[in-house]
Length: 140
Ligand SMILES: [Fe+2]
Image (cartoon, rainbow, N blue to C red):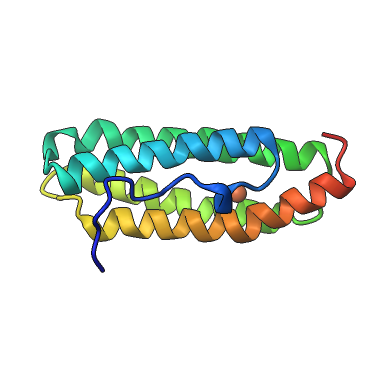
């Protein structure tokens, strides 16, 4: 796969779920992933990997927690399954960070593409599903 653009995860209408707080946080997440991709893959600045990877983990954790709070506050029936999906990704990210912190691990294109694909699919499927439910049933 050819990666021409610096923006790995393009923020566009197709990623909007129609809930303002979620869209805002997803945009922030896309930004963090793009920064990591640009520094590590395009500019080959491995020195920036640590801080940028940590940022992705932090932004992800904060975003998941805020999304889960919104679901819990609205008694979303799909909460447990959604939390499970979030936990899966967070575990992958934590493992990645741990490997990086132990040293000798070089982040590569495949890792950022994995992150991009996971988020894109998650936003368009699970998050969009919740957003539709929220707009129909939620208290907001
Ligand atoms: Fe989510």
